[in-house]
Length: 92
Image (cartoon, rainbow, N blue to C red; front, side, top):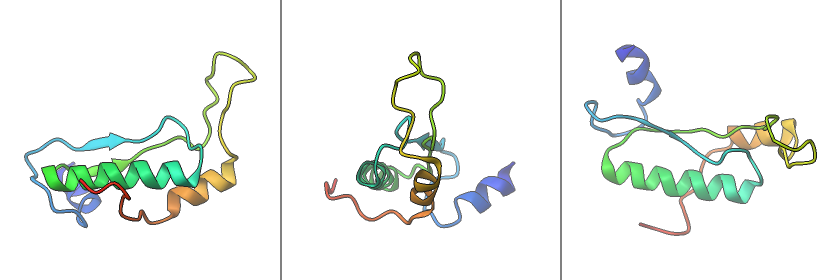
């Protein structure tokens, strides 16, 4: 497990004794939201020495109503997950 984590976080400076964070919006709603959340959380984690993995669903099928928003479409959402994150416009 340690080798996997070292490989996963090799691009990040962090304290290996710290926990790691998996976080992001419940479902991808737009490119702007994905980039803003990922950028802001990544900056916070970098300052705190916490390794970070962005996590968001490309489709959210388990909604209480069949008419609820489930995502922007599989292809578009998956393309957004592949894009590199830009710096947040809200510096910390």
